[in-house]
Amino acid sequence: MATPQPHAAPTGGRSVLVLGAGHIGHAIALLLSDAGGYALQVADRNLSSLQRVQALAGVATVHVPDAAALEAAVAGCHAVLNALPFHQAAAVATLCARHGVHYFDLTEDVASTRAIRALAAGARSVLMPQCGLAPGFIGIVGNDLAGRLDGGAQALRLRVGALPRYPQGALRYSLTWSTEGLINEYCNPCEAIVDGQRTSVPALDGLETLLIDGVEYEAFSTSGGLGTLTRTWEGRLQQLDYKTIRYPGHHAAVRLLLHELRLRERRELLRELLEGAIAATRQDVVVILAVASGLRGGRLVQESYAARILGRRLRGQALSAIQHTTAAAICAALDLVSSGRLPQAGFVRQEQIALADFLANRFGSVYDVEGTQA
Image 1 (tube, rainbow, N blue to C red):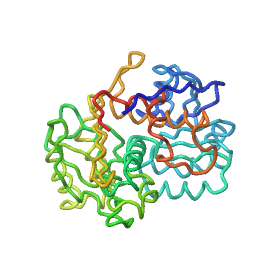
Image 2 (image 1 turned 120 degrees about the vertical axis):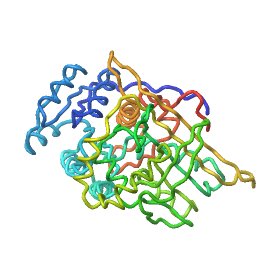
Image 3 (image 1 turned 120 degrees about the horizontal axis):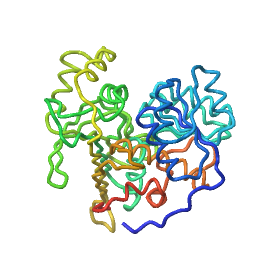
Image 4 (image 1 turned 135 degrees about the vertical axis):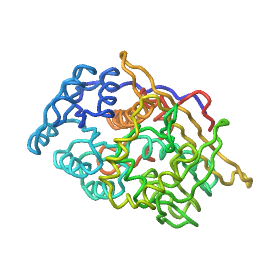
């Protein structure tokens, strides 16, 4: 991969509102305040969360206890970065569209993305959901790999996992992400392209074994990771799928919980069980594998990207790998819109971002890791 050239940081102190003072909202605020270039505020309805972010990240905060306060905070902003739970995405995007404010989020929820796409018709600002790791960066790199082959790839296989570095128990898993989002991914239908046609497959299907840099993993279908790629590549790719990477044995335990014990029908109980029994950790690793295969000059070839990303410390604070990669991706999307390198209105897909632009960005460079093959 050619060494990307860095782009200048935005100037002018445009006002940016981060919605949500949880783990990811805190990481976004920390990255943006450390890098500079924006007038930043963090909003939440939970006062103790706001106080924690203010103390640790040193940013201004605003309390939004109700819908009126939220709308007042959004109005007049340059951009909103939504780090709230996925079921609030469409409502916040509606406010941003009403006030002409650029909107970015991290949702993996397919229905929320469809609703936001519908809002974008005639919008005066950018509406850009799915700006995290998967969906998000994995769509950017997958689109780039597929485009390197003659006429596009024949098959594109995308694999991502946020895993504990020191797994324990039968699940061999620790909570590194939103539990609601995790359950959503494990239960909802998964988009794919099969034999050239856009379709859906059940979550947890397609179990496979992976060997990455000598470490054995398993992977299986989960919902939402492809973002808008199936629409972009329908009719041009024969095969496109996304699977979540886990340690061997995780799939069998999850299938027991969801199918045999029927907890997929009782999601709130499942959330309580998971959060009560599985410890959260900041000692995690993000594993990424993207592989495109197709023809170049009449020969079958393969293009790939592989990365193993750990957490980091910033201003003396530990950011987990999933915090850092997710926050960095949405911050890079903000930068690229603010600097004019992306459209300035309407629905923007992740694959509209050039991989070289993303890796050259001051936030996106976390994905330009040593040892990456492409």
